[in-house]
Amino acid sequence: MTGKYVDENTFAGSQYFDLSGKKFPDQFQLEIYIYNVTLIAENVKNQNISIWGQWKFSIPIQVNKEDVTMYEVNEWNEGYSIDEVIVTPIITTIKTTHPDIYRDNFNYDVLVYGDENGAEELTMQGFYDETKGVFKVSTKDIATDLYIYVIDESRMSKKKTDTDFREELEQRAIVRKVIHL
Image (cartoon, rainbow, N blue to C red; front, top):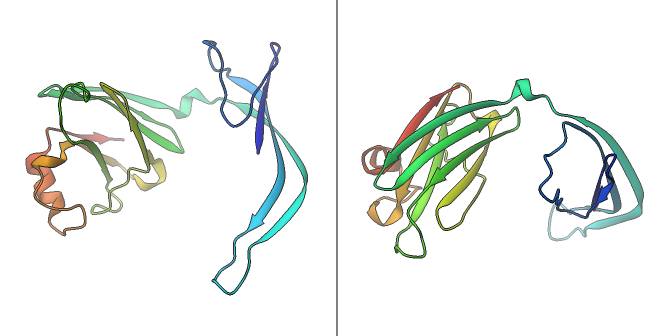
């Protein structure tokens, strides 16, 4: 699959877009080209089926900034922080800061829970560099409250699968914050 971003400056790319420092546009046409669709078999005895063809989708994109809510958190402890939470109708993003991982040996992690499934950890994607982290969860899993915990895994005695892990998490999290959406 390839993607193409087109505006008055016309820029084309593949799966990843590089705006070269430009602000992401509020309105554009997203073009998607698909050359193969694979239907995954339901069990081992069946085989996957590939359908070859050429499909082109042209989707008008309009940013709706009214559906985006930003929470400045700035909750700090021991050099760790929950900086900001950005809530959109699809994805909720949590931005954090932590001590330089290349200088300090620690097991930094961010765990996120919603009020819908209180025992189920929601983080679906995360990445971090030397001192910043970005973690994403599906907004549909949060009804009214978002629980965010920054931890050093070496301080935890329980596993995430233990029934009383959340209780220990409340006690041992370096930084914790509840966001009421």
